[in-house]
Image 1: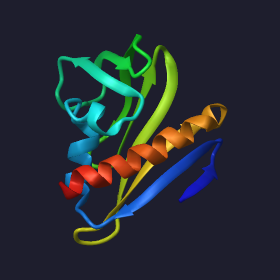
Image 2 (image 1 turned 120 degrees about the vertical axis):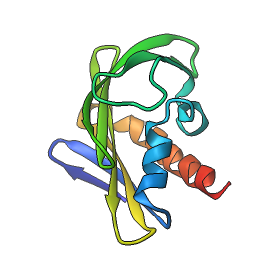
Image 3 (image 1 turned 180 degrees about the vertical axis):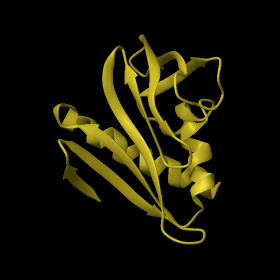
Length: 130
């Protein structure tokens, strides 16, 4: 599912797992390089993100950039700035017991990043099955 809402793209996938399991993966900095196609490593004092969490990601292109979590609502949504620029959002919507929708938000100016988000959704689904 890809939709344009409020000047940003929403890229989502329904999953047959609990909100808590998906939230655990998307907030755990130790797993980001396993599902984030553009991330090869993370340096962060917090294993699980929260409002104000700061760190650095190493991209798959080899350079490091700083990040800060700028928006955080437990078991619902978090967003970040990467290299000082508003980047993606990461949300989970409950759809009933053991079912949810994972949604990434992408600013309209970063439309090509939709492909990276689609690959991330697939990787997260694989992680959940392993």
